[in-house]
Image (cartoon, rainbow, N blue to C red; front, side, top):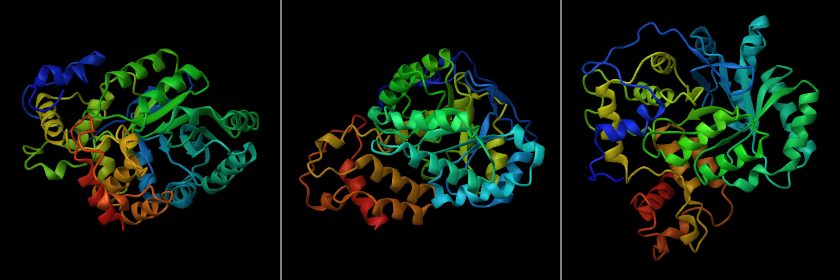
Length: 388
């Protein structure tokens, strides 16, 4: 449904809270949870109970932030060997080594990109390097990171490495993470496979799809735990005048929206400053209120044709093989996440010819291809200018 088709409050709620069986709160005014108490949910069929807000570590390198997050009740730490070239895991390790018995109360979730051709020994070595940086002898969950095609879930060396590491006591559960390209196909494949116990993926109120909701429900029924991230749908709230007027918090509303789905165990929030800890944790235990729903609906209407879902639907139309989903994701990190240096590095590392340089002389085969009405070429040209 596109802007102008009269989504209406009732239909918008059906896309989130009410479809999960939860109702909204007060009709007017928004109450702030000034002294939040963390809540915990079961993570699928694992024996793990995780905080409703997880500590996401993309862009993180300050151990004191993590200590503050743990003091706020966060017990799930989501990281990756590739975040800041291992700096995120190093910072986590400086905290874990001092925890003593408290380490047993935490759920550490790390991973690495595992693609076809990667040897079992390489995967095991990557895990050992992560454990060394994390200064722990085990992690609760290891994942194949940034999956964007179902065939990436069929790497048998991953399962062989996982079983060997599990027997050695280095890891307990296997998961995957994905951003957008062929996301629902990847979810369906992982659920059918039966060997994945945790799914971590983007989940937001703008690019919400019935297929993703059904996949979450089916996965949960089979004991798969779901962790949501990128719930802010592009982090572009500052572009909409007075969106948060009246004391509203867009960030808190998006967390509440995601947690209104009982099939979501936790929301992974990228935390890079102390105010964010209070902001994210303040959403715990709070119901979405009418004013917040109206704010989210307004954001969705404004951003519908501007927000790239990184779905990759347009990519087959490109004669130059531009990696549209990746380019637009890196541009989002640059422009809205404050990760300029990282984004430029990621862009520079794209395979030869997959950046957007060719768009300057292209005949725009992608015109009208985006199912959401986005101007693809214009976005790619802007991204190239920023990232170079």
